[in-house]
Length: 497
Ligand code: ADP
Image 1 (cartoon, helix red, strand yellow):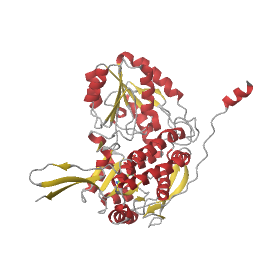
Image 2: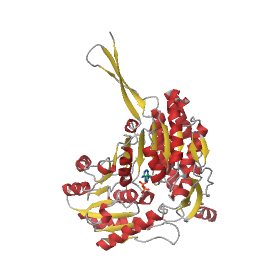
Image 3: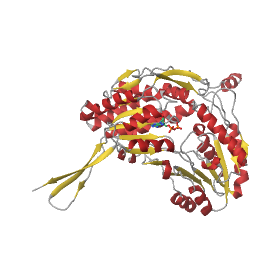
């Protein structure tokens, strides 16, 4: 009996701090220093200590990478490879990621601060699944035969778009690599990727695995560096055919301007201020749990975070009390410890920005019913924070905070809540909790958002398209829809007499 008790008290042990293996640029299959010789520090947000110095790419490195990618696209082995063999390579990369899953999850946690239980259970499996999903598409991109007037044979071909520039953010560093590489590689494009300056390490490690898998030189190039230098150079480069960007809408506006000169194809996955609507007839405990997950997952650093929680007046008090109880149970701390549920925000800028929004919420008269402060005195930790009695005009209800700050807004009727849910410039995601099927469909039809979750939140699958209405984006990622982002349609017409 005593042994059993002792055993059950043994806590899961902290995951060892992973080794950083790769900090250079990947250009044309070779790892190299930046032309300028410059490096930048990547910081552990849980300790504020420098993890490693990483090569800092800029316009000169982007130029080398874009030319290597162009050559690989035009004349390298990749351009002649059978589509099914491209699929095999993508699968091989997924297998290598799976073989190194613990190391990659720990590295993601070290660089980004997300709890290792999330990186191990969500980011990594989703990234691997995404690559496998697109590996299956490589040999299934077909055209059509078209019955045009006259004696002609008319058909379409779906061809790779060319060299694609991919610029990704820091909130899901490795998952964004998979979302971007999967469809681009399946389509036969070549890639120059700029990871976020806050979190370059897992992309570089996966770059190593891609080389081990056997991707030919120049197919995948990685240029860590800053947005206004490396990112902007990629957007302006004449040899780059397309930019796929995930990040803030303000950055997308700059990119759109910079891309005008070369008329690049653009796809954007941007921010949100997603409404999460709880009707009085919902399964309350499920709605509370889903609401907690929908906002606090990933420290609130999700573009689809359910940050405006509309609660029907009849259940408002009960719902808020249950939500506050759940928020109090969230364990903050060392993200490499498997018990930790919430890690630090990614960097000091985000940390300061979130605290300034909490101050704005208090100043505007919203009632802070949970959290509201920094947690501890080292690392960028912020308590799970809930504001009640928020009104639609407050900054905490209109602006994307990108942190663990949830706003509760009471409502009375379905029509009212749909109108209020839509009164935002964003349109990425929305959720509704109700047992009334009619009400659920009415909401799903009328809300202007790219994804609607009914009685669930943050359910992602590589096969289900994701992207925004309005200022939340252009185009869709995931699913067959993402393949459109990386292919051009060619029409061929042949005279038959
Ligand atoms: P976040 O607030 O999430 O960091 P950003 O939009 O600033 O969002 O950053 C997302 C990505 O866009 C990062 O990789 C960043 O370096 C890059 N980026 C920032 N500014 C520019 C720019 N002017 N041109 C191209 N990329 C940029």
